[in-house]
Image (cartoon, rainbow, N blue to C red; front, top):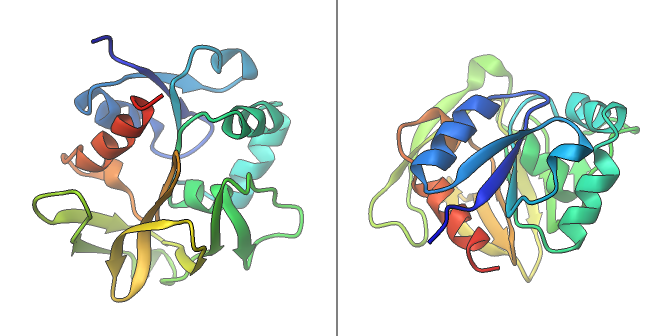
Length: 194
């Protein structure tokens, strides 16, 4: 079976690390910087970074509307950290001019665990995985609300930190910063369902 091509939004964040994780998970990664990079993708990863800056970069590169259209058309998408914020239906503590894709029925709270110095790592029990996943949280958001149609895949101290709704998956942590590709494998499996 051919490896699916999955885009990685390459405007900010650890997009190269996501590309390596996707390769390990059985997909070919393509960096996405302009609308011409979108055709032929079977999925898209929106990495971490600074969500309000990423929103501005999506606008200035003329990518926001084409990405929104692709997601609305059923393109599977996986957002980590800032990517989770950009995919949320609503954002708490966001800038007034910040745009989101409203692709998953969650409310995200930016920097919910504190500042950069409050970053941490934790082992998570993830639905569908046979052993704990070691997660890296950096200025992490949290999901303040999860809609009825959203499947919770992992929690940390009661907070939902990994969730999925249809073909949209979000993580409050950075799975690309480990050598464990199992979270990306969960997303690639969703990509293959199309």
